[in-house]
Amino acid sequence: MYKLRGHHLFCLLGYRGMGYSEDYIENMTLLHSKLRENPKTEILLVKGPDHLCEKYPNNGKYHCQNDTIYERDAAILEKLDLNIGQILKWEVIESRIQKYVTPSDIQAVCQSCSWRSYGVCEEGVQEILDGKGLREVK
Ligand code: SF4
Image (cartoon, rainbow, N blue to C red; front, side):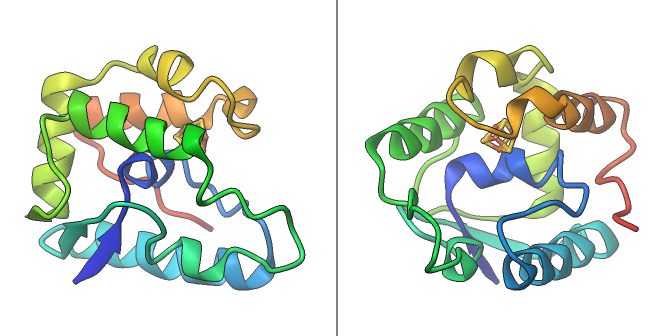
């Protein structure tokens, strides 16, 4: 089971192998592959730093405890009608995205994110809506 915070449920959709450091990328790629290959993998929704934050580099400006990030987590969980403490299979999270999310939601909930301008997160949402699941990272 993996611990994830709200906004990382969306970040995984747009993940294309980019990240904050080699360690961060290696960790995220492993998780992403696991979820793609086994959508029955369980996720525990947590408040604050999670499995991905564990590898956030020490040399960068640590943002994982910023209020804006907590607010983004809460907005995304609310959108998906999910709560901290719930345990769900990844495929259930994908079905919530299909039910409650549109690509343009990224513009609204992720306003301050530096990765947003790449457009990959909207693409990732669309691919879930199209039933394609997570895109393979090469
Ligand atoms: S825009 Fe940023 S916070 Fe939002 S899903 Fe993409 S990477 Fe995550």
